Image: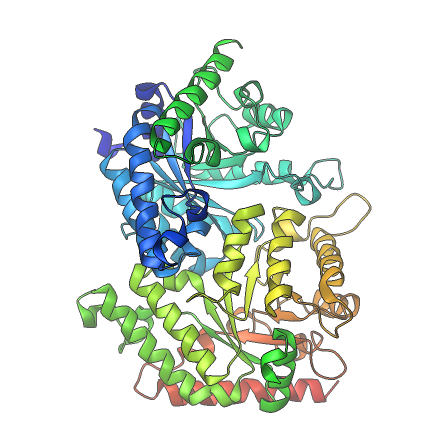
Length: 296
Length: 296
């Protein structure tokens, strides 16, 4: 029964079904393609947002069988105002209808009843209710627990930022603590404890981690230390992550991780062939990652 | 010219005008008052959100002359879906019309063009465009710079989370680094550097800090170290922050900080007198903080 499976069980099944470990990043940048450019709609936000929905629906139609899941970047919807958020809700509904697991990449982080409100917003049954949400650990354990609890209760998932893929991620995340541990390693320990606390004997905990594809050693080390925790791996392609580098994110069965890419998949053509080109790019990314996994 | 002043200059002027250092926290919790309870509207989200707008407009009508600024907690709007976000836009517009500086407490954090999108969403001219935004430092300097740049460009402000007020904040933020510094102290150093980089000789930098009212020693120490940085001080009242404890957040002129309170001001009555009671609570909080400042 698919309906009784948790998010990470469904993600594992979906990877096996599609033979794909690709997470399709949906970051609407209307000015990045002539068909969605704001100038085309005299800047009318409602029409711009609608064009973005059509654009990504065409991409989904072409790529859905080739991707394990999709990730919506909340910022690019929020900047379009109310029409942007309606577009986000529409794309979440569209992904659900297609059976593609959907992650909202909103990097939310707060405490107590505020964190609960975010958790209900993005891991509940409302219009923004996705299968999983990215969250930020800076506020401490009482900032993470409400998300983990909601995920466990609702069969959803959270991905806690552990080690991100940006150039200056090291400034804070790699700080050396007294005793020699790096800050992100301490965060990974907290994630492991939180995951263990709500795993209840299942193969996968409802708590995952965001670990960038630009730091292959960290990725492999964390994989060994967090055997029940799924990884969301950003930074592939445009940001420098390579297939061999991200291979370390996967377990012996080729599960336990998805690798996301946005611009390199969805904005690789200025023409009307954008969806077809997205299909080719997703197929190539799927192949490259699977080849790197086969070569281990 | 009020229009040419930066956010923090306007905030200073507003504190002098209202003699208030109170930041009114707007966290709509519809189930917390009979007049806005979802049961009253058969759970219809549009009506629930509209009732929340009326509720807080009545509170603003009663309290605006007694508060320095207002802070909207994004989570409580997002959990109400599209009608909730329309409500957020309406309250932002209402606050602007009343001349009350408005902070969106969304604790956003991301990198590069994603951070830029958030910055444009909350510090731009769109429907969610506020005077200031709270941001999370976990992603490093390239996660903060786009917010600081947009704030500097648009005469707005950002408040970077440095030391929060929640019970388990210490788990991460108080970690001791090699060399003896605490993590939040290192973050405060980055904030100071970022602030200095965009201050341009003005009295106040466009970059502020969130420092909880529940850690008075940290507050006073940071005040001394960050002379050009405004503090947003949560944790007053319900969370245990006391007037004497938050006094250390202010400079010698009684400026440089605002102290926020939400539930204790806006949900202190179950009856129809909620706005009048909010007025009394805001007046009492204003008095208590001013008294503590006078007693230094």
